Length: 93
Image 1: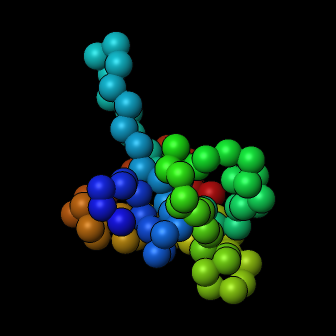
Image 2 (image 1 turned 90 degrees about the vertical axis):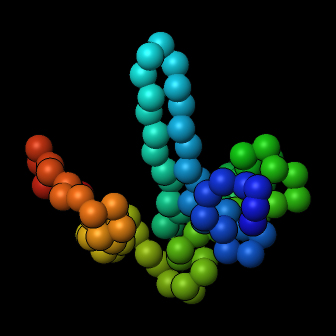
Image 3 (image 1 turned 90 degrees about the horizontal axis):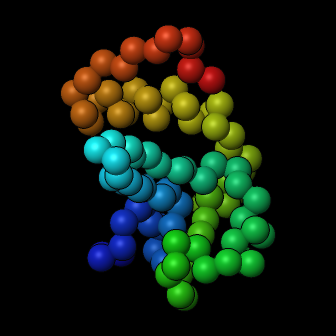
């Protein structure tokens, strides 16, 4: 929910998005929770956001979802949304 970054399912973050700038280098990335052990988040304040939770695709869909399950459809969607072609030095996965 605004103003927070990432992808949210209600009050729970399912995907973190980050950007880092330093030493004239910009890096960026995302972390999509597929089948993450969410109990680790019980020991921290995720992303420093009090009162907000963390979820995963597995929890939301009620079935085990691995990175291998979502990698190809995720990359296909990325190419479509950003109108680009991804090139790999090795096959993904």
